[in-house]
Image (cartoon, rainbow, N blue to C red; front, side, top):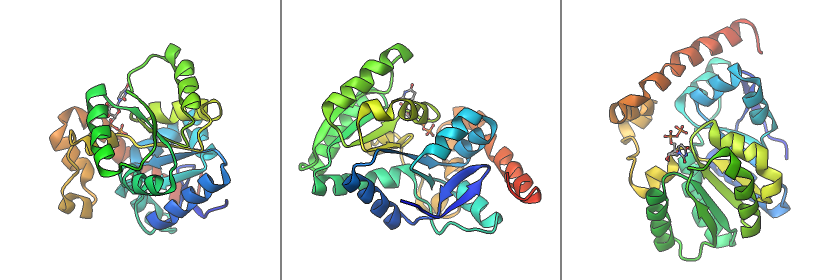
Length: 246
Ligand code: UDP
């Protein structure tokens, strides 16, 4: 399944709309071909540009979507614009009713136990038909990873939603995609907190102006250090254009 991509700091970011992305995932699930989906924002793309092992995860993924206005801006700046954002949280919310309809079983991995329980309670109420294969909070040690991959395998889940923040979720998925036996494994960042109602989504005004990062910064000032990745990302993209590609 080939798809058009734009090279942002070495990572192939898909030029797909949300609807096309859902079609792509549906085809993957119908064919049963396992693949990793990365929903990449500026922080992820910048980290990948500095870390070859992380970049190779993005290069080997079945799909890297443009999660965030930074990625969208970069595609435009590089002269190959992506039509719209395909964020982890939107993709997650769009996949749930589709999975309920198609009877694709899902596994929820990540967030704190209370958040996970609350989110699953809400999802069960909203999509009673959705087959939930299993769940596990996102706080486990490296030594527990292999056993966890085995549990996910035994749950026979078709879709894994991993919400442990980056780069943890991408690294876990890349390492255990095959042994887990899932078809689609997707990193969805802080989405479980959003669905549980713990972390409010930025109001529309912020989203329309590409300022969700600013809203999150107001809400969680401890993110300040992470926000410094944004200007670094912008400089790196400018350098990419000047050097004509990476
Ligand atoms: N988290 C987790 N395991 C960890 C650290 C974090 O499951 O070891 C969860 C955390 O509870 C939150 C999500 O990962 O639900 C990270 O959210 P964040 O907003 O940091 O996502 P990012 O912006 O990094 O993708």
